[in-house]
Image 1 (cartoon, helix red, strand yellow):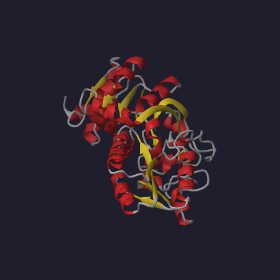
Image 2: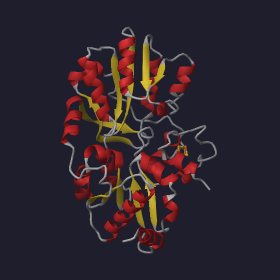
Image 3: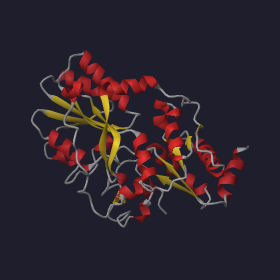
Image 4: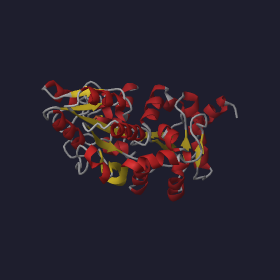
Length: 347
Ligand code: SF4
């Protein structure tokens, strides 16, 4: 089928309404910037799920990082996108402004160099992300152990995708098909989602991030919905293996155990987090037991948006009180957030 015919099909589709969800922050951003929604029929709705790691990191986690950065002789190391995320009272950036020690890094490996250069200072890395970034933290731990560095810890808010997708399916999110998270699939392999497709009789399309790749992935997903084919199809074969990457899975299992953790706006999702195993407790900066997030602006609808039950424009704060320059909720902070991207292409 020619690409132009695929576009025509998606533009003119007039069958039963279809609700699709992407669960990858980079897909959310790519769909917005490529204007993918503009070529879809009104009968095909694209929703943005909980795929932005910053957006699902609870307020209590930010508060804990702030407490740590204000401790004597202690530095919090983090990627830049976490700096502006609001905690219950302030962001890490604001805490830094009143004397907190916060270092922005580009790779967890930067922390190794800092820890080696300053052996009397404790470094706590903010480990946020999904299966995509979790292996990098295992590499950091491998290196810290090999080099005998005892002044590195991590505060983990790492999460895994299957638990979140199960939670959506079990809690009334009316989704007909998922665009599988592209980066996660690249690390885990496409078969990682087979069990979910079977359990919930729902199709998954693994897609790339280019405009054409997304359109082809969405078309494939729509076809699976129409033809009632609850399976995982890989449309990103240049990067994603069909099978499952057992090496990555076993490396994660070496350091981490599954745990019940809080997703911002969604609550506790059983088995959806990665906490350090007991034998590596000396590297843990206190990740366990970070509580439900209930201190954010009550009007913020991030939770409903992440569940596919609302869109950013349903939020009364969107574009008025809450903007990328002055975010009220995490979905507006990250460039992978659904509110940020809706703001980007607002009309
Ligand atoms: Fe929350 Fe802002 Fe999005 Fe509203 S617009 S849901 S306040 S992040």
